[in-house]
Image (cartoon, rainbow, N blue to C red; front, top):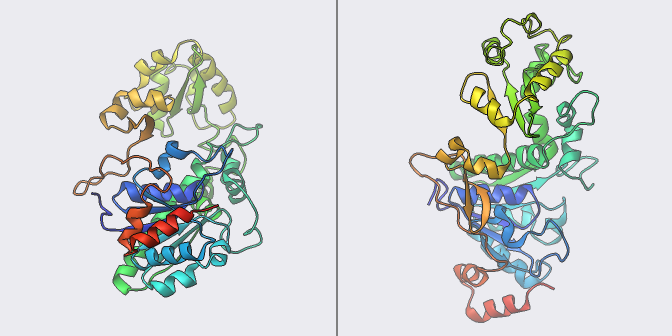
Length: 379
């Protein structure tokens, strides 16, 4: 059930953005076959098992891809697949005999999605890295944080997921549309550094207009007192983002500052640091609930800063059922939403190899061969 119902995707197990892309496709109804190693990674904090929400709704098979029989089984799965996604370092899939040339030779319509940090080529292609490194090099991290403080961005959201998983999903779906009209598949090279640089184009537009200089604390989105987060009397936080004149005028009026001459020229960057201090002192006089009652729902562009558990119970998110506890895990619902083909409630996280026999029967493998392959398992 879902807008991608009937789509078959093979996902080679990896960390971070590739699994998240697979989750997005599974949420929208695709049949995502997750090819995992057996046994797990003992002691690896990123091996989440049944807590790996990014694996919800997928079917799992455990194969040792260093075994020729397992590689042959995977290539038989490729024969009937629409797409394959992988998140290995460049060259790893080729060494396994499962690179784009081998897979497209079996299935010329296949879309082969590749997720890396630095891309398939370039001087850094083989270097290790993580989200913070990719967004640092692309220029995205530079804008995050207060003037004079080290830049800080929400972990994984900007790079791994924003510039990585979402661009891989978009690229795979676009290539699938092309393959369905032309009969020709192709490789999608999704690099986090590319995606985060592409995300910068909106900020670069503001920069070109002279409103976001490459000087921290001087732009419309990182300097003004009317755009940022503030601590409240109870140690909790609120956010304001009143960019346009009508919105910051309303914000100041609701805060009792409408007649204060200091707040009349909201766009003079010379005044921003001092006025930020004044707003900080004001917000610190009352608890978060006070400011929420005063400002939420108005055009003052306000929201309390919530934890995900608090967000679950917030009236707006509760009305839209954005968060839910499913199988004992707090998780967000599929997005976006579709009117004619709504996504189903997400299915659970599969156990490692849970659907192995079922998947192999689907490619016509006999029971004896299935038993031999699955009993052999990975080392």
